Length: 185
Image (cartoon, rainbow, N blue to C red; front, top):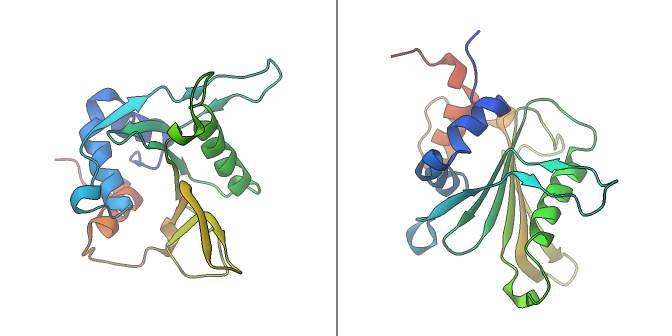
């Protein structure tokens, strides 16, 4: 059996090393459908291990942690198997990434946008058919956005139904989902 890019070790090798920063920028631009002036042009891979605050804290090791030229932080996770508390874990990882930015003397206004991206090889939201679910802090009753500083994206690969991708978004997901099917050159 050929290895898949969805294997977290291989994903980290391909997208999570300093040499892969240009490739990761392309992946993020495709998955987040960033165009024009919003495209990521500069990206740095950061240490994926978030330090413990207290000895008894649970350690956090992200699959890929990056910061773009605008200062936005990204956590990209690949998850092959359904996990009963995956939403809680993904929220916790992104929240830790957000809170790690602040130190003594840092202004709250200087906290950078934090974006969590989960590439899932299982269905997390069976109640809808959407391949891409996107969450932010929003009051649904008053239709008021509190802030866009914290975003979570869930990409459910089993819901990808295209045979011939036509967008960068579909192409990247297709390549990730079927990477083990491609022939060696």
